[in-house]
Image 1 (cartoon, rainbow, N blue to C red):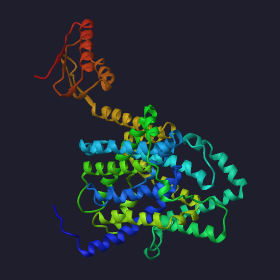
Image 2 (spheres, rainbow, N blue to C red):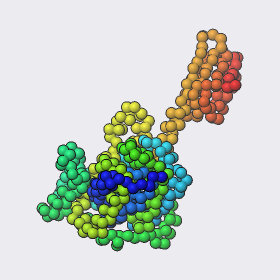
Image 3 (cartoon, one colour):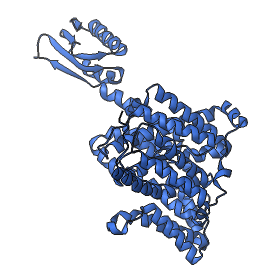
Length: 489
């Protein structure tokens, strides 16, 4: 292993990249925490752990971890149902599961998850995120669940139209979205700051200067926000619903992190990700977050891409970004009290829209309609049920789709109009294709001998074999000519 220190120019590049990642991560850490219904400090704690714990461990050298918008809905639901104190238990156990999966070398198997299911999961999260944060844009509290949030939007629009304070908050949030959406179109010399920080900073300055009556972030201090789980919280594990939440956290956080790692690997030419070690790094980070009662941690593609694009060369950049977050949380926590929650909601609405694969879905529909159906069905299932059940439905649909496609079978019939009829069954004969097989065989002439050749089959399941034998028996009883099943030699 190479233990030589990095050259000075590499360290300077990593230092500069760490500052960029810090500026990107700061508003996202706070915004994800507020949207999850927990104190803003918990988002900063998770970002710090993502840098100082996961950042130091091997796995992916340039990937940056922290609280992710993708888990916002799941965290909000868990906190609403089981209380903030139980969050630490959930995150802790999810981290231990990730550690076990990494130790068992299961990290690479997450790459076998259907991409359509993952994109559908992210799309479902995006829809839930947008529907929930639209209320926060107007300084209003939503019903809390996906379908009720969507159903309540007309009422929200009517309420906002009648309230000057709600319109003011909406203007602040909408302005944040507009700035973020148009930030990349500005000349490079104007984009010295990341779009999210510029948008939130501009909204904060505007509300202070004009004295706008909008809701702002509440902070209580970093130390007081730490709430290690106690024995009473662990007793809640007797609830099967809480155990299902733990499993959902572990699987979704792992899948999101490892798919992010695959995406980050495509952005640079440095060392590739070791998926098992990366899964253990994520698990260790979540274990620490759980012990501190903080938000769950995943690898975040936005921060990771910013890290690569800023020229990072080693893991030093992501570790240093955690140091800057720690210094900010320790020295300047009061600065957060000036930030309007509507601006943070705007950041998350923008993030939610980026999770919706609108263009990708249209392209997928034209080339792989089955994949498009799985993606859309997964997103809608998450919207109408919950995260865990929606992903399970998506995985089931992906398996059914794969089974249907791999059970392709073709029957070639040779019939010269008289004498022997030969039928060759080629491909994979499974129960899924049985109706089509029998429909073709029943059209064969009943007044002549038939040889049904099975040598071209790569797979023949028991249901198909029994059905073919039954068809041959019935054909032989109804005809004077014999049907023979010609098996492979």
